[in-house]
Amino acid sequence: MPDERPEVLMAAPLPDFLRQPLEAAYRLCELANSTANVRAIVPLGGTVLSTELLARFPKLEIISVMGVGYDGVPVPWCKERGIRVTNTPDVLTDDVADIAVALVLMTSRRLVESNRFLHEEKWLGGAFPLAHALRGKVAGILGLGRIGKATAQRLEAHGMKIAYHGRKPQNVPWSYFEDLKGLAAESDFLIVACPGGPGTQKLVNAEVLAALGPEGTLINIARGSVVDEAELITALEKGTIRTAGLDVFEDEPRVPSALMNCERAVFLPHVGSATHETRRAMAGLVLDNLAAHFAGRQLITPV
Ligand code: 8YV
Image 1 (cartoon, rainbow, N blue to C red):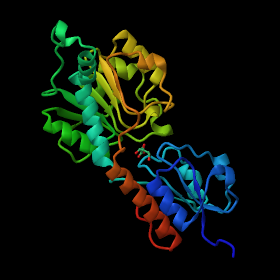
Image 2 (cartoon, rainbow, N blue to C red):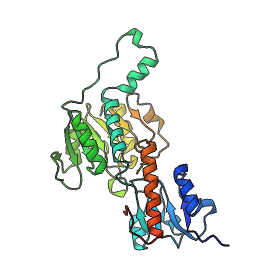
Image 3 (cartoon, protein in one colour):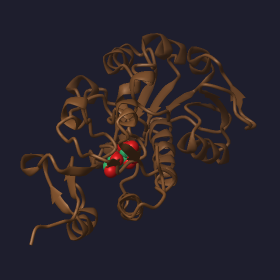
Image 4 (cartoon, rainbow, N blue to C red):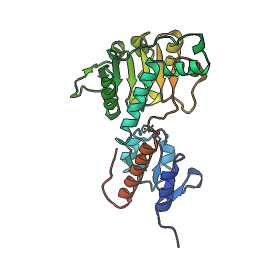
C-alpha cells in the first residue's frame, strides 16, 4: 500500500523530541532523499531556505519554523504562492531574556574573566580587579518586541534605566529614541533584540559603536546579521567600546578568531532558547501547527 502521509522535509538536524513524532505522523525526509511531493518543511530559526530550493517543491503548502525568527524564510515569496509560514513565539521569550540579562551581568561584573582568574590560580597573587555595577546605568534596547520587553523588565529589576529604539514609540514607561545612534549615545549597554533579515542588516555599524563609546557594552541575543561583525572587531580592538556579550554571530557556528581573541568579551554558542523546557515547547508548536494545517484547522502561530 502506498504511504499516503504528507511528505515533510527536515531542513536542519532536529532534536529527537521533534524528529520522532514527525516520523510517526509524516513521511519524514532529508534534502538528499526528498521528492517533488514535499508538502511541508521544518527548518530551525536560523536555517536559510532560498527561493531556488523552495521552487523544487511545487506541492509545498507550509513551512513550520522551529524558532521565533524566520529571517531565513523568504516570506513575501511564500505568501505570493500561498505557502503558509509558522514560527514559535512566546514560549522562548523568558529564556532568551534571561540570557540577555546573563550577558549583561557577565560583561559588567566580569564574571567569565574572574572565573578564568580563579582557575588559573591567580587569586593567590591578589584580588581580581573591580568591575562595574548595573544600578543606575542605561540599558538601550534595539527592538522592543516580546523579548526586548522581557529583557527590559528584568533589567529594570536590577535598577537600570530603560531606553529603546524601534520603528515607532510604544505605550511603555521607557524613553523612545527615534534614532539608533542617539540611543547608543545614551546607553551603557546596547542590547540587540530585533528580528534579523534585510531590514535590519548591519544596523549596528561603526558609527553606532562609536556613539556607544568607550564605557559602552554591546549585547546581542537576536541575530548576528544585525551587527557588522568586522566593525565590531575593530571597535573591540581599538577600545571604541568597552566590551561585548554575544549569543549570535554573522556566520555561526563559525566565529572569527579575531573576535575570539578579544579577551574581555563574552561569547555563547546561540543558547538563548536552549533549555529542555523551551525547546520541547517549541517542538510542540511546530507539531501543532502542522497538525492544524493538515486537518484544515486554524494555524496556532502563523507569521
Ligand atoms: C534557536 C532562534 O536557536 O528562535 C529563534 O529564532 O534562533 C533559536 O531559538 C533555533 O531556532 C533552534 O531551534
